[in-house]
Length: 410
Image 1 (tube, one colour):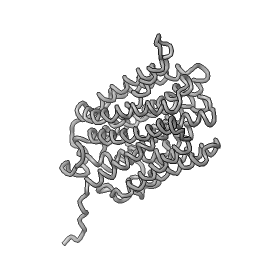
Image 2 (spheres, rainbow, N blue to C red):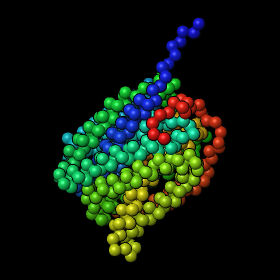
Image 3 (spheres, helix red, strand yellow):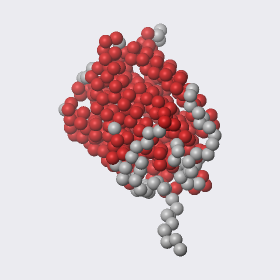
Image 4 (tube, helix red, strand yellow):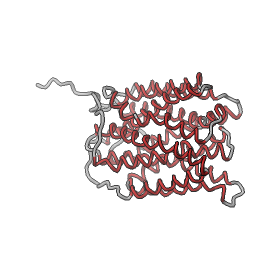
């Protein structure tokens, strides 16, 4: 008689509840940090656009190394790796709060934060994919993303109200953000290892059939810098907008995202990844041109058009769901997914490390509109690549668990 113990059934309701807490805590952390970091750099160190571009190299280096970091920690399950990543995020933010007034120390703490934040990216996507039946994975990821957006509003709202009315210093904001990341570490550690993957994960996966997914991440890395580096820098340096204004825009974008992301997920399930990613690329061309040339249009307040670009830019980040579900549909096995997502993050950040320095140099020598002309050309390249995507309707890898096991919001 076979004496092998039968694994206990997964309590999906409990896992989803814990994961939503994790997503919310990380969303609040992001809302606090991302709305203040550019203003913190400007107010504390008075750096130029060229120096800001160069700073993206150490900031994005951990993202480039995320596949190697994940491979080196192959003995940890996705959930344990996520707990470690959240602890690193919290440690980096605490370091910024305590030591961030010195440039060298700021860079060191920023790299620690970045290592945690980037290791967390493939972890959250992998867990999210495991918490939905195959036919509704995009919709479920959109709903999970909406939870993150709601929490981001809380984080950005704290910056808006705290800095504008209570005059909170950057140090206090970073400390609260660190506490939120620490809470994420606690709750993700309570999530059970994913079914069938309690042992060692694949160290690295590199397959020719995933080449379009890798190429999409090349364009994603370049596109991301429009938002992370130069989009906010237009508001901060060209239009002299303070941190509370950036936080307000983040709140608006997050509020729209709460409604948009679930609908986006349903659109991906209904129309497919190619249609959604093509629309994303077209809209990004318009966003780039708006950032670069709003000031030349006959508008009473050209900054208002830049506000729209900023909000639309942030909302469109959700289209990354389509890249993840495209990989999920073509993956040879469930075990390939986390390693391939990690490699995608590394490829994304290989581009992210080089584009900002080039963009900063172009900004200094030729003016900021040329940065966004280049970004629009990159978006066009992304659009051309998307036309080659094919996701045939065929059975994929065996779902992590039956559709009937999924609980939570539809």
